[in-house]
Length: 414
Ligand code: ATP
Ligand code: MG
Image 1 (spheres, rainbow, N blue to C red):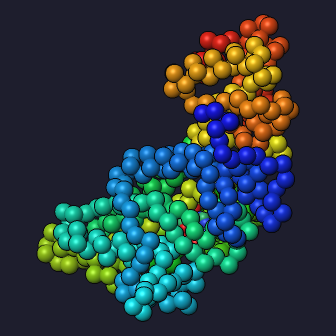
Image 2: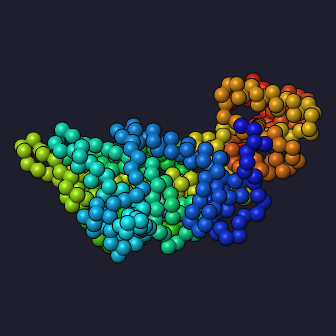
């Protein structure tokens, strides 16, 4: 893509009302637009990153047997009354709205109820189980704090998968598979080494749930970490009993701030029993389905990648999620040899189907290089007068500034 055709522009100053590093940089680089507090639109470059993240998650969910659906954001209060979660005192993040004829509707903040109700039409026998159903769908949450940029917004896409199993044993097998898939997602997104599988509170059916927490000073959660044993404990379950349970001592733990990037949760029969989701087993008895929920916010993950990898010059994307793999920057004067060489190189790259953003704008070299740093594409290829004389191009690694000289053939093989 030619950069001159992007409608977005970079800006030098961060918006004064943004405190989060992720939002400051993403707004400055033209990746997102803030509509109002806690509500962000994704612009062309931001959407490319977002979609790359979604592709990684989708691949990993399909690999463990996930079947993708797309449920509705509009929710029927009757379904939610069955679980008791229509009540604003039980769920304090509801956005509710009214029908013209006076009835009420909810805007989905999660989908346990809706999907359990839906599955009653498809699950009736042990032969129908297990099932793993997921979606990328909009959630609305009336969050009180909206200071973390795109990591905590009031409207956001969540990947939520729900597992439907015959019993606890079958459920646990999938739960561990999904934990492994999450670890793989965070590895592929470039934050694996900072992300801990963390003991968190489990609710009514299980002692623990598992959160995937990325260490980050801007995080809202506090962890207690045993590096040797690779155990992390969320402060919310940090008790003497839990420490004894996990076989670790207070003195051996360090604390760190962290961001929850994903969450997997045993639900037992909490929703299936009240929504009538049961199956007939081999002996003809009726048994409620054992459920689990597995959440992950691609926007939260995108913000976390920014928090973890960006530097004082701007965004830094790992190739797996970068809006483009290569940023071709031409340091030319209009109509000179440099611009001709860059232009034909770009056309060759496009012909080969390479993922490249070509800065063909009529702008000063300093401005182009600063913008390229801000946008943070993994590799920058600089076409300048010096290289031209010796037939080479500079290939700059955005993450560490390393510069390599490469021939045209080598560049086309990237
Ligand atoms: P938190 O504890 O951060 O408020 P939660 O426990 O309420 O989150 P879940 O319902 O478990 O969140 O959501 C699953 C995942 O969805 C989270 O791990 C996170 O990746 C993402 N997520 C949750 N809330 C938001 C939000 N307000 N904005 C963006 N992503 C979110
Ligand atoms: Mg949580």
